[in-house]
Length: 280
Image 1 (cartoon, rainbow, N blue to C red):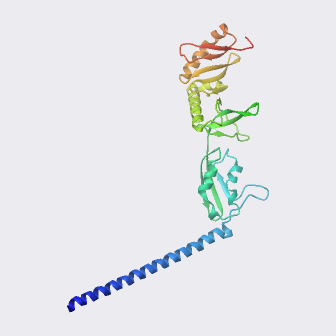
Image 2 (image 1 turned 135 degrees about the horizontal axis):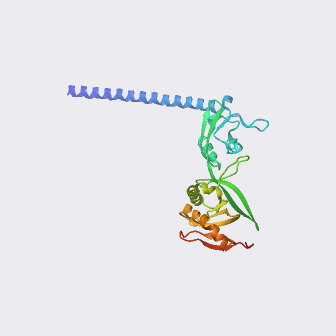
Image 3 (image 1 turned 30 degrees about the vertical axis):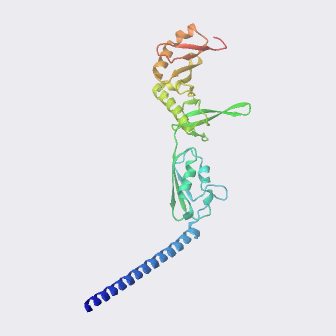
């Protein structure tokens, strides 16, 4: 019995010591957590309030903020980029929500991608990847009883881009696209137009306008023997059909001097659909 009692007493002492060690470890861990939280709070408060980290706003004369370094923005309006950070001027760089600022930049039409980085202690680096326009687009707008038209640019993804001042582009002109159309629909129309331009090659330089209102029947307007004609090309064999028309147009003009609209969708024939009301 004595040995058994001694063994039980030893076990109790070991259990008590183990419990004390666990308690000490837990207390030490808790103390470290508290110290870390206190240190974090101190650093957080320092970064949020120290004037060395304040983001300078636009200059007194309305110039750009010296705190923003903008790269890659050739056609994007710099004022719109600066405006995305309006809520950050005079505040600590530490408080700037980078993801939100990036989303604001991506909402600008010309911005395809963007990154925003802190440059400590008080600068921001903004890198812009711009969209590339592939065509001009005529955008009809209905205002009251008057029909108006706006000329803008459009990229391969169907995103409409405002024309930047003093920029010059040599691009085809598209019609049949509206702002109200969903972007996938605009992208489909642009894709068809770019396929036509690519297939026509050098002949595409003669086009006055590409009408993609019906992607299954692309229409083009181009000069022919001193007048503008409208050609219906369908959705394939663009080059073959246009070459066939150019080859036979002198003969057609002799027989139908007032014809200005032609259906070329059948590869073995050219059908005149409408004559110029002014006559030959």
